[in-house]
Length: 133
Length: 133
DNA sequence: GAAAGTGTATTATTCGACTGATACGGTTTG
DNA sequence: CAAACCGTATCAGTCGAATAATACACTTTC
Image (cartoon, each protein chain N blue to C red):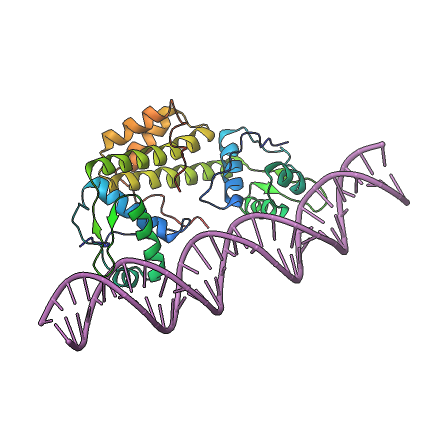
């Protein structure tokens, strides 16, 4: 059973996207493997404090991406093969890092400064969690 | 007059936030300086193809952050002093980089790999701009 | 001073995200 | 078999983002 203990909801993006990314990253990291059971829609929605429909929407997307397999009546299972894992990994990496690089460049940050910030924050990722309104 | 020629709208976050961040980053980079004129609400909304109210919302936030000063009837002016610039710089840096670091850690990426990705993408920031749906 | 441009405010409307409640049919378990 | 659980679907409703259309008061410019 996939654990959502480390799932931390963040404002700014839809909840269903956050669930999708949480599972995607787990699959890439290997903490979520093929054969693992997804919590039921009702169980997970109660755990996260969101609506079952929101969880359903996330599962739908994960299914379309080849990460999850759902059979009416039974629990959904993770079915991500190595090809899918590799694809998701590239996707997330290029997208997330690309977003950061463009932002920092617009701020006039140099490559050296950018690398230093990432290197420094790697030890204290707690920073940057402040409210941003 | 502040130029919005390099403004690139991105889906995923509210338009008014994108406008705010565009100006914030310009102020940090120095491409937008104190005394610069903000385009009028109507002008900018027509240029970006959005509603005047959306631009107004962004300006309201920029004003509350001490970046912009508005006087009814006259054009809004940038009035960010060095203290504000420094504050915005720290905010954006910690927030953006922190977001990335947390995401990559969840993916099981090592510090070394993270630094390599940022270093590599610094030369080709075009990557990662694909649709993500 | 008059016209044009500007910031500000208001009301109504559309749209997607999210909630809440409920229902149906299939699977699992005892 | 029967109860409990599960995925799926639907409808109604709330909320914020964004649009659309006006209107008002002030400033700049000629």
